[in-house]
Length: 292
Image (cartoon, rainbow, N blue to C red; front, side, top):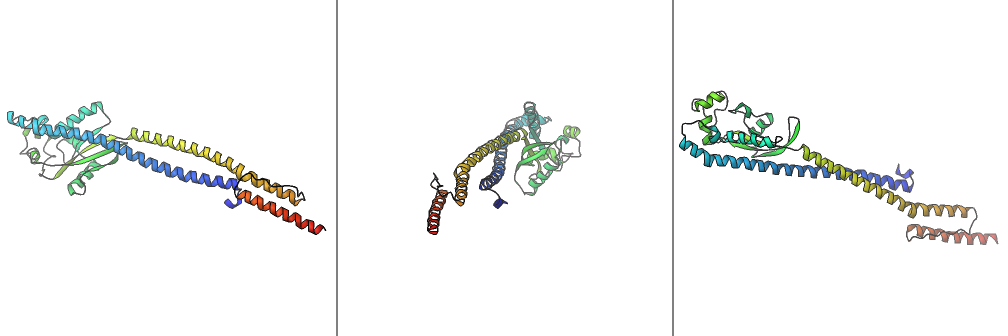
């Protein structure tokens, strides 16, 4: 196909092909970089959220629960003695200001039905329990929206067993509230749940795509201007000199031996013109000899 085109069209076609390939590579690479940047930013947010929740739990376990158990040993007060309860309630308060963020304590065998793991969470918890992974992070879809999620295992500790061993050993008020069908049979050391934090990425990804659109538009405009500039250069440095050579050659073929090729560049076309001028002189001498 290219061999049937003029030099000008051939160069333009090659440049357009370069543009299409380079734009595809640039956009693909740019999208990857921006998506990774979105993941990094989202992970930072989830880590901050997770650190706040962990600090809350540690404060309850080291400061609040010992005093409650000391002063009120017979009182059922899960809000001050059970870490999961405090985490869940604290997360609800945070979500009042940031409703798009989701914090979940999930388990395939929860005491509170609200904490029952969905299929994704259940698979992740199973992987934790099997020892396949120590943590998980990545993009996930939830309720039709894209989130960046981070998950960490929650093994049963000795402090959990008094609530989650059997319904008979658990506090009667807890059994009355949650029933005796789920949330029992925990063994210390087993991974019985996971902490999941979901940070929405829709806005961040939209911003990344917007940046990518601006980049593609700017890249295309730059390439268009470059194509116009290259086209002008080709016209004045290649096409017109060649057309001049063709015009002079045509006139000489008709006997107009006074025509002279004048090229103002120092490139291959000038070399061609000089060779043509020498050929014209040789031709003129040969014709002069033949005419005697």
